[in-house]
Length: 147
Image (cartoon, rainbow, N blue to C red; front, side, top):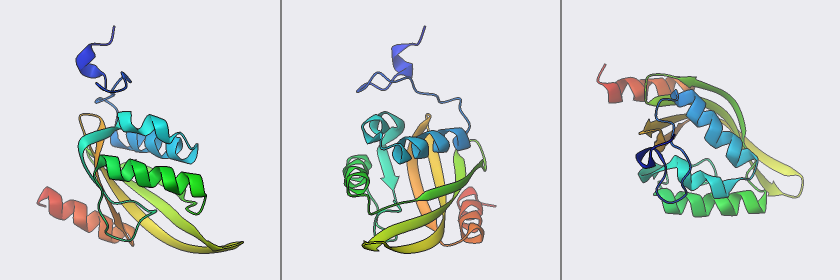
């Protein structure tokens, strides 16, 4: 039986603090791609500090702002990401390769490659940072780890 402490207090959805970061990242990204934004609040830490591919580079959002912006991005269809890999770097962080696409006009897409670092606390997405390359993301991860 799932203890109440292991459930999100708002939605009752079970938390999975034991899942590897890549598994958690894939779950969140699959829900976003499936336009299941209403499920995402249960997977985001209340003290989240998030960058998002659908926003201006380096703009940061708290959980509520990120969810509001995600809903708009999903609803408009202008943001069309493709997530290519998700790999756990340690017990808290996943590296995600992505192609970020925006519809800039009818049938016209703007596209760029990006690498996300998604950091989890207590099985919930706590922080995302977006980089232009895998090398930049790995360097930032090493710097944050103090190595």
